[in-house]
Length: 308
Image (cartoon, rainbow, N blue to C red; front, side, top):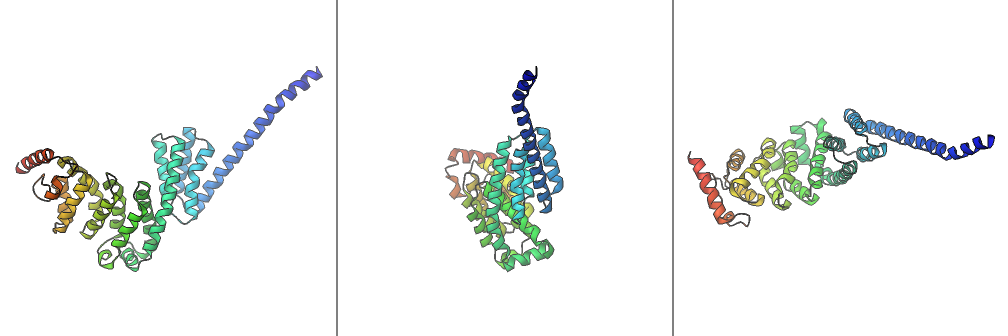
């Protein structure tokens, strides 16, 4: 009898050891996430968003290791004095949409990389005396760090959506003169960078880059810039033109002295050339994205609407 009890005990020993080790691993992971969140709080990451992220992750059944892998890149950025709240917000967005854990982690890691690249472009630009004057005038000197973080977040978004960091740098360089920045607010520049991925349809970031610079020089403010992607989309549909063709037509309007607000309204109405609805500049009529029959048909319908 004693032998049997001893034998059973020996059989149970591996199971008991496994349970003991497993509980220690879980405890270690729990402690690691707790410590990570503490570090996040110490480095200024939004505590409310962190708490919401942890609650959603637990409700979804996400393991502590997966949660650690999502939070860690944000903490790493914050310790480099880089913005990180946009990382947490992206993770929350992924959870709300039911994106798989590994995909969320992959996106977060790409965002970490693009944020670091963005900082390499934005930080030198922020040292430009003309930029500093603009920030002081439009936001106040006490908000310089906030403007810098928003610029990095906007640039990170563009870079993560296949806009080369060189394009972002070129835009900031071309508008870096005091003659331009003296008439702009930081929100205008941030809006311009934010819309780059939305108007670079067709994989032509160079065209979008050139237009954004012209739009800023042509008087577009942040509110008008944020409406541009929808306006360009409307003009595309009405004229069967690719985005590059629409942007070229809008650039010609600006070159001709058309006010920014009118250029925007023209695009919403399908007036790529700035004339009557459906008007397309000659250089764009034979664009590969538009057949002649399509262009004439759209133009005829557009003119019909304009005459009503």
